[in-house]
Length: 296
Image (cartoon, rainbow, N blue to C red; front, side, top):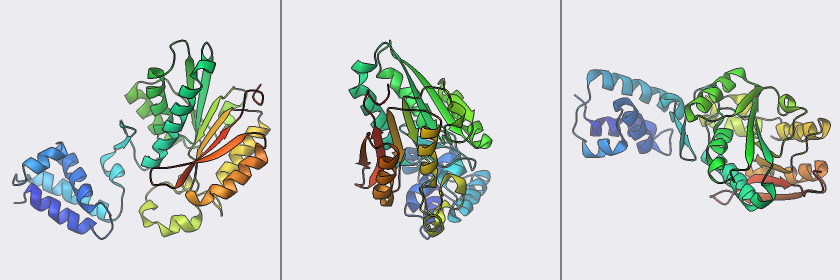
């Protein structure tokens, strides 16, 4: 027979070759199999697993040892304190992406007095699992004036990804309009006040170097030779389709700070541009802010 402690030790040993969080990975998977919180594992180390539990845990351990993301094995990923369904149809939400939510909340809170008695439209292009726009739809009503109506949109080229986003929107009971299409194409003719984008930004070399990414959708990660192809297309769409958001917030790779600032300067020469660092001190978010005169 196998106890909880033995199962954890065996799994952690296997994961140590491929994961920097081997013990945590083992705990998450065994908690998932047992349908118990991690505290149960700590307080019941000598409890024996049933045969079905051992077999199921063994299958998950084998897949995790091949670098399949934990979130794909459990179909769950926490983002900004909320639980989201994920599978191989979508990119796994990253902790660093939570900074985009922080920036939007900060910008809206700081400008709330100017937004009263009007409607605000927020669009998330390349929405994937919907984690960003759904989180905003859950949180913003709690900080905005009741007279201040907000419309939420998410776009994606992938119908399978949108199916995941719709599942998450329903689970969180938020009113988010999810549309299929490239970048801003589904929103042509609509006013967009805040545009948020976590588009692909890796180079092929970065993707090949990181073996942990091979199970996630390549199209959601890689964007041309320099990793900026998706953002070039986005900025071109903004000009071509006449959409003029007064706030654009994009997640970037830290190595792209200078070229993406130059790209933003080219397309939005009169806008205020700045880079915000993540919790590790790396450049992570591009903020493009236009004044009222520019957006009228």
